Image (cartoon, rainbow, N blue to C red):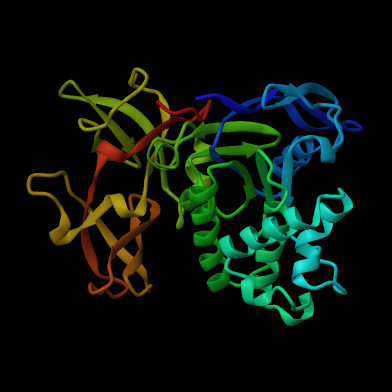
Amino acid sequence: MSISVSIKDLSLDFGAVSVLKNLNLDIKDGEFLVLLGSSGCGKSTLLNCIAGLLEPTDGQIFIKDKNVTWEEPKDRGIGMVFQSYALYPQMTVEKNLSFGLRVAKTPPEKIKEKVARAAEILQIEPLLKRKPAELSGGQRQRVAIGRALVRDVDVFLFDEPLSNLDAKLRSELRVEIKRLHHALKNTMIYVTHDQIEALTLADRIAIMKSGVIQQLDDPMVIYNRPKNLFVAGFIGSPSMNFLHGELALRDGTPVFVTNGVAFSLAGYRSEKPLLPGTKVVLGVRPEHIAVDEDIEPGAEMHEAVVDIEEPMGADNLLWLKHAGHVLSVRIGGTRRFSPGNQVRLGFDMSVASLFDATSEERL
């Protein structure tokens, strides 16, 4: 598959502060790539460099094999959707959608055709004669997306477009954006700090920290096999459980030992040698810990005490005390436990993660 956007050795400094650091990234034609990270990690800065709104200190940006590093935003073949809707309040939806085309002196019949197509795709045809003040937040964001859509560009850039909406609207528009990508098959680069948006929308996710991409991969690979401790802790809600300890050998089998309690690593798929004496962090997601009758026959079992129960409808979240650690465990919503209950736990080591305590890299 051909490359749509290519970023080579990109750096950006604001005075003495380095925001992007020798960043390299290739985005495939028609791919939906999500830039994910906490505030200040550089994700919006990278998007603004691709858009031409910020000038990089070093490196190059290519769109469709054309070097656009110093091109004006209007000449890059991009459409951008911002966090704020940025609609003209005095104009109707139709006028807002067509404004850029009219400025570019596009023929009126072509404008009418493009506006009608965008309105149909985004299901805003009944709103064309309204002004922004008469629209809900979700409808305004659809219009903002439509304004980028009418430009008929190669690459769409989204800068946290759903963060101003309530939870229900975010969920609805997330589905609309995914449907839009399936219909158009354009390259889309999407910035968010919301991991649910990232996991549900992306073909690939680039997780960023301090101007550096920590892991670039398929959402499920990132979720199930995080490359380092930062990625493991960033993805997942509630977060992955982390137990600090060290590696040892018992009867020739690697084990993880923490506070005198040993966990067999017989089912763990290691990427690097598991050397006895290595200080490590064991990571297990809440849904990968079985409780009582859910434990597989013959599996290794551990004792724990229920601290808090959080009923969440479809499932329950248990907070447990075990081997000096507090663990979160996700169980079915029909099962109930009270604080102080003694339970047995079974850890699924085939989907667990081990990290070197010093380098924080996956073992």
